[in-house]
Image (tube, rainbow, N blue to C red):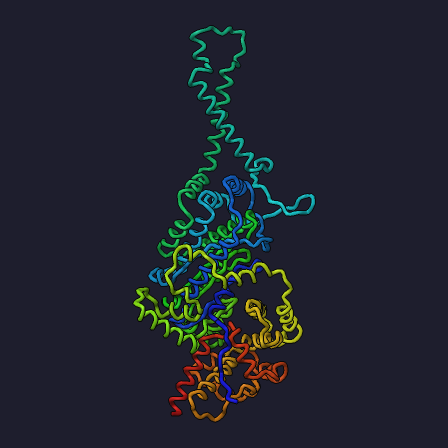
Length: 629
């Protein structure tokens, strides 16, 4: 029997699109979250982002059951004016969800000195468009970051919102003060009108007609009117004088949008040299975040802000790293509803990070890949085209050429469309077809929305295995454990939407995920060795060792030991791995029976295999082959 390294019939790229969309639509998804779509230039990251956004829009439209009326919007405006923002609600009992899409193409802002500011300006602009002009402006007037998410308890111990109050002698609710001032203003206006039309006559008018006896009291009705008018004018004048600065700020906020305010801040000379400049920007982001959380709680459905960052690897190295640092600072508040999806070439960005760190990177053995790993909670690696996909793409090009199809098909988009196996994506679409959810996507949506309350035995089995058997192999870093947990959740969902039992056990999947997460360099080396061996076998190249599907992974590990120092940056790559002794112990104990066939079955479900490491290994192997040849 001839053994071949054939790929499992799984549309990995299409599955990735569905997985990310379903994950973002999950009610239980925690925010903030940063997702990385990793792949070399031209691999289709931009097209994947476009498809993902389109799919989320369809999901949002499909499950939207109600829309707020004019009274509901006015009621929300009153709540914003007179109540403190309530604490964010984490879980909602509804299938509805709203998305606010913020697209940031770093290449378009490459000429700016503060490239990252484009994310913030686009963010606040989109939020104002979603929430509405008046609600956004009034919330900015009354909001104070130190007073966000205040809450109280009623007699039953339930959470209640707190009224905004102003302390004069005793705390008085703001709406009472406003009502009093409005009442004074109305009374003053009415009295002025009555005097103007002659309904109320003053003393000067009365003296010309009648003579007042000296014995009468000097306190007449007209004097009372004048006294009331004077009191009203005095109170209103004092209110204006003591709040001149606040009134100017109110007028400025109503006239100037939050986006324009941030743009004017960052456009000032030497803005980045100002002490606390990032805190000023973060304050604006916190206000926008609190407003979205309030809207979500009021509408009783999640509202998530999806920020897509593309072409970051095409910018200068310093600006690319500045964007990553700014995202970590500005968009990482624990209560923020932000989901950042960053499409990058990890080789370029990792190199930019190492360049920024300079000597610190080498002395501390801190690689750019490790830095990215800390930044990205979930990583999706864009897969390469299979032989079947290449043949299908070529056939489609032939059909387009012979039929005289005038539609332009880019290499990148065409590759993705073939890989997705969706012929209808290549055809011109009408507006109606764009808004229609196809059968495949509807099936995936049902899995994520209608069945998310079912008992997921596969996920439960994986978590039990992680907690009881594999946890000892994970380094004692909370971030590392959280990243593995996120990967487990996404992979379990991937198995779920397939609709058929996988050819591997949950325990095997947990071991594999931990192996790649804790020892990415050694694991990638073993995968490359297996793939390269089968490719050479198919080409008829003679090899000193032929890999079989029944070979154990621990045996492959022994074969690659002398290859670990081949890449030029092997010392830095080795620092990505955890304790090498634990690596061998894991292969010789829990993964003792893990063979090449298991790798072949489980590899299509692997979402966190770092392409930058695989590239370094392939490049090193190619140099060795040339030298040996």
